[in-house]
Each structure stands twice: as C-alpha cells, then as structure tokens.
Image 1 (cartoon, rainbow, N blue to C red):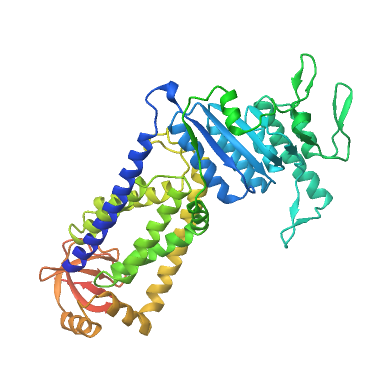
Image 2: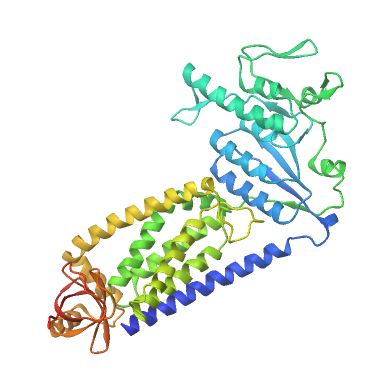
Length: 481
C-alpha cells in the first residue's frame, strides 16, 4: 500500500509541476504583453479570411482576450469570407462585443452572408477597392455540402430571427438597420432619396463605391466610411501609424482544440474511470496513466480554445493530492477528502467556462456561462457512474481483469501472490479506521486495507473481521463482544 501511494504521489507531483510551470510561463508571457504607457497601447488585427466555422471562434476568442488584456486602442477585423454558419456567427459577434474599445472592419475583397453580419458588429466599416458586401440571406446546406432548397416556412422563420438580431446589432453600432435588412430579407425593398437600391425579390449586395455613397440630410454613407487601398494604409489613416501592431495568426492548435472540446464528456469519463481503476488495482500502471492523460487533454482543450488557463489543471491536481492524502494517510477525517473532491469538481467545471482575462480567478461566473460546462460535467458523471457499475460487476469475472492487475503491478505483486495473501488474511481481525458506509478503511496488523461490509454500516474504531474478498476490497463484518 505504501509503495502504491508513493508511486501515485511521484507521478502526480511531476504532472502538477509540469502544469504549474507551463501556467507560470504562459502567465508571464501574458503579463509581458500589457503596455506600461496607454499611448503605447497596441492595435490588434484579427483576420477572418475563411468560412465562418467552429475553429474560427477559437481564433476570435483568443484575439479578443489578448486585445482586452493588452488594453488595445483598436481591434481591426481583416475580413474576406464567403460566409458560414449562423450559430458560429452569433458566437463571434458576442465575442467581439466584449471588446469595449474602437472596433473596425476592413473588407478585403468580400464579406458575404455571415461576413456581413460580423462586419456590422463593429462601429466602422472600410472597404478595399473592388470589394463587395452583402448577399446575407440564410441558406440550408445539402448533405453533399452545397446550398439546398429551403422550405418556405423554414426560410421565413430563419430570416425573421436572423434579421431581427442583425438589425439590433447594426443599430447598436451606428449602421442603418434597413440596409442590413435588405441584405437578408428578399421581401424588403430599400429606397434612399427616392432611388430604389434593392427591389423586392432581390438580395442587396453593395460594391465599395455603392456602400460609401452618401444619402439623406445631413448626408451620411450608406454603410462604408470609405475605400482604402490596403490595411496598412488604413492603419495610418486611422492615426495608428506609430502604434505597435499585433496580428492574431491562426494555428493548427485551434483545429485540434475543436476536436478536443467535441469530446470533452468522453475525456472526463475516461479520466474518471482511469482514476477509479487505479485505486482498485495495485501499483501505478496503465489505468492511472490513461486517466491522467485524459484529464490533461481535457484541460489542454479548454486552454487551446481560449476558455480557461492552466491554473484549473493545477487546482485539479491539488484536489487529487488531498483526496489521496485522505484515502492513504489520514483516512476517516472526511473533511480533507471532501475539500479535494470539491476542488476537482470545481476545476473540471471552470475548465470550460469562458471568462474575460480582466475577471479575477475567484469571480463566480453567471448562470449562462455555467450552462455548457454543467451539461458536459453532468453527462460525464452520469456516464462514469454507469460505466463504474458495469465494471464493478462484470470486469472482475473476466480474464482481462487478471491481466490488467498483473500489468499494473509493475512487478510488485503477481495475481498468484495476491491470491495467497488474501487467503492468509481470511479471519484476521482489525479495527475500522473510518466509518464503513459500507466501504471505507480498516487497519490489520498495522496495514491499511480497503474494506467493505455486506451492507451494514460500521462506525469508526470498531473491531472487524475479514470474511472474504470482492475484487480488491476485503469484505468484513463487525466482531461482536
């Protein structure tokens, strides 16, 4: 038992040190990005140069958080896209709204569909020569990946919902909501100064010269504040020629993060099962390695996605340490184990909570921020409970279980030796060192064992006798005086 505990301690120490060292490195790098002088605050360039799909949210989240942490003067979206998914577009708009500074879109060639939606989420829009914006009517993707025919009822419903959302976004940022509406709803006609710009049955698409044309009294641009030859020229024109320029570059890690977070529940289930099997088998072997690896990948996914920092991984390891101390060194105290379990659950939950970098670590997230993490954690706990019940009833009866035990002992204890030890301990009497409900800890000749009753609860400090073994738990009964 002592070699098992020390093996677990060594592995977890290395894991914790790795996590905390990485976290310190990342924290120090983040601290270096903050300007000491407000006049030296950077301008962030956030490229949206691909279809609006889930991996892009990670890039945008990372860029917005870096801009907020660096007290950036301005966030410029470098836009060139054919559009994409509406749900992803809504999430990106929410992310951009977090940045409270000056927000600008520079349309590089085209901003169709979802690109037009995101553009009006900024206060200013500039366009490059021979660029276009518009054609934002919702479409339905066919199974082959192309645009499919959308039923009339569905089209009306989707158009109405999207149109209302984007009109509100446009109006909030000082854009004409009727212009945006004409890009979405083909049943709307757009007229300015008596000129029909978009007839009913058509979807509005504007060139750079059309978008910057002025209408009304006093005259104001239709949508764009002007045509600028390049992004570099725009930065100079906006007065940021001397400011540090930081461009958020997409990485392959964002794509990896997409896949990791899709399987967050499965990773948690694997992690919980790995730790459960590790506690049920002697030595430190395959289940523990797989369990810790699954948890590490889970936290890595949250970090890559820009949801959380690695401080939650360190908190998880701390909770696991406390739980091991409770089980192997001070059994029966309960409070240490409960604190450890609480820290582990909290860290798993916070690993998927999306917080702004300006929010303190001890800040309690809102109910909306907890919604997705609670779904993942709830699914994982339920799935783990089902798997543990199945494993505890079926696995001990299989030949694989004996092989698993042999593989995880790392030469410390063979199955045959274990069986001989169990046989020699039959009838041994000891003392319960924790309340058995029905499981807990018992001490026999100075050796701590995992014990379980047939269902009766036995208080701490009672004389107990070993009457059998179930898997690796000794079955005990109370010794009546």
